Amino acid sequence: MDVLAAVIAATIAVLPGQPPPTAADVQDSQLSVTTADGLTLAATLHVPAGARPGLPGMVLVHGSGPRTREHLRAEAEAFARAGIVTLTYDKRTMGYSFTQRSYSQLADDAVAAAAVLRGRAEVDPGKVGIWGLSEGGWVAPLAAARDPHTAFLVVVGANGVAPLRQQAWADAAELEHAGVRGSLVDAGSRTLYRLIAGGGVFPEPYHDPAPPLRALTLPVLGIWGALDRATPPVESVAAYREFLDQAGHRQYTLRTFDRAEHTLRASATGYDRGAEFAPGYVDLVGAWVSDVAAGRAPSTSVEGAGEQSRPTADVPPLAWYESVWVQAGALALMLAGFTGLGFTAACRRMRGRSRVPAPRSARVLAGAGLTAVAGCLVYLGLVLTSRGGQFDPGPMIAGRPLPWLALQALAVVAAGAAVVLGVRTWRRGAGGPRTVLLLSAGAVFVPWAAYWGLLLP
Image (cartoon, rainbow, N blue to C red; front, side, top):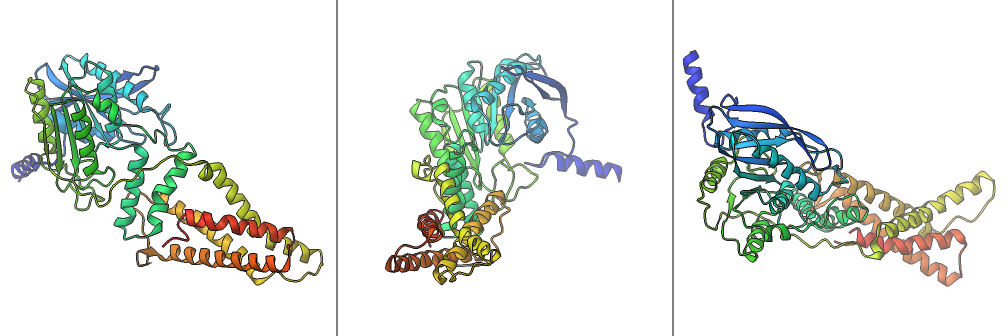
């Protein structure tokens, strides 16, 4: 039975695309990388067991978020088994967060890691390249273009568009995947991210991937999953091809793998992620790097096709009239106007002062407007924090979630009440300060609600 179990385990270990359960055939060494600004990043070297000196080497660059080298262990060990010495390192935490980062600084870190790898006896220093995943697909080309010692570049799930445009597309596609249609798709993606970027909390929003790619003369391997839901796979391949062709590049290979998601794991929808790499992915990287290291860089080729349900859209910076400060002022005015009616009425009752009740249109405007504004902010916040395939719109009518439909109905009621109150006030003469404030809030509410999709289909 023990022999049979061993045979079964060995058979499973070599199935295509199946990472083996152990890494006995890969030797690890703990190293460190000193960055240009003096940080020390822990690193791990992965070497094929019993390998001869002079193998090609590859530095692995992380995707977005705070990452340690353990996040790329599966890739590092798989590539090591394919004959490539790999080096992974902890991503810097100083100067990197969800609201702060510099791709140039991250590229310098990758260059420093490559220098460490070239100094290892297991590696031929003239055969060291850089591999980048997702956000690393913006960083790795910068590093490769900056460091003349880089022998090749491999990118996986890389973007051919700017980060803000990519993120807005990904969130819109996710909403549509959940069945959402109508104004919520744009409000919960493009409009929301323009405001976030305008507030300075979306780092590197307009990074241009073209210049470093146009500067490359080394062999390039670009790989995408056909079911990539984080990166627009069709447009990214086209952009890479365009940028490299503009540079007169003749040694690039672009491949799109069927039934694979963003990180090249097997997937059925693009939002699920299997434990296995897509069949052929690791083999392609190993064979391609081997050919490049042997001086047989493949000629240009493009194969495979991605699935992209919607095109990306331009996400321009905010104009002055939609800036964060203007939006904050509009919110302050609306909240003051909508709450002021009830607040002043309560104060008068507490003081025992009688007064004719406010017109029904005023009370409707204040109640519906306040609920629509507060509800819109809360609901869009829920959409934003439920990214990554986790958003559940619940019951819908014609692709509109019921909470969003309710907010839209309240917005229509508030807008109508504002018109009625305005006409009433005009006919009967100027109202008091609270009426003027409420009408001002209603006048601001109408364009604000249209801007955020509450008055759009």
